[in-house]
Amino acid sequence: MNPNIETIETLLHAAPQPWPPTELKDRLIAGIRLAPAPAAARRPAFAGASGGWLRRWWPVLFPGAVSLACAAALVTQHIQLRNLKQSVKTLQQQLGAASSPATTARMPDTANDAGQPDELGRLQAVATELRAEVSRLENLQKQEQAGAVRPSSSWTNALTAEDQQNLAEARERALSINCVNNLKQLALAARIWAGDHKDIFPPDWLSMTNEMGTPRILVCPADSAHSVAEYWQSFSPDSNCSYEFLAPSSVYEPTRVLFRCPVHGNVCLADGSVQKSANPEWLVRRDGKLYYEQPREPANPTAGH
Image (tube, rainbow, N blue to C red; front, side, top):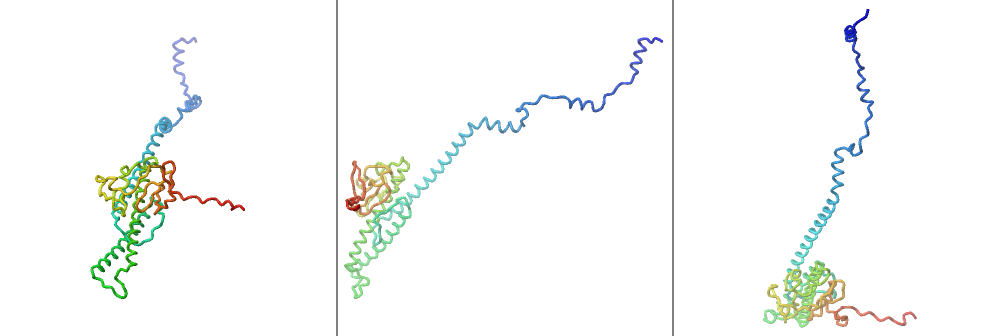
């Protein structure tokens, strides 16, 4: 029997269809070898968003952060300096009002550290006690002169010659104390001004009016030739100032004389200290500048024998 083509095609179509294994697709996919991805492609999305952004912008952000920190520090220092100046101004106004005579108290020969408010407060307290004692003695003297107080055997309420001498000495000491107090305030004002001007002291009185606060401290209480100016608008260096302002200098010349009182001989040095009743022999002039220096003792040539 010879089948024809149609019969053969019918037999082929009627043959069972082969079905692939169920795991064939998974095995083919697992067998595929993919090329390794580049390192940049395998990086997580968040890493590129943080690390790459920071690396690109840090040259700009770092200088900006430093500038912001410096600005904050400058603002803080400016506020502190303004508060310090306000405190000094208030203290000077309070101490400037206490310029009347006072009486007996101890006064050190040298008043150091013009920048300490405690020393100024101590001087103010001493001046208050002296004024109270002088007022009491003056009242007793007036009563005695008016006949209100009669001398008795005990002399409890009368002023003796010794009391009158003590009263005169107390007045002089009180005036000297107030003079030293004025010089200490002037030294403090000058050093504050120098701190804002490259450690150079001001050239004249009017340059540091903001630091002094009141012109009352420019008149020595024992000086009757100069009057006290209540306000800077009416201040005149010739009429309302007792102290000598020597040539300006820097804070790096501690023994140079900055201010001097011609009445008491008190001198204020560039280091802020005030020398009470300065020894004239210790005033040394070099290159047109006045210094207050204790002379050195001559060497003893026989010390080594």
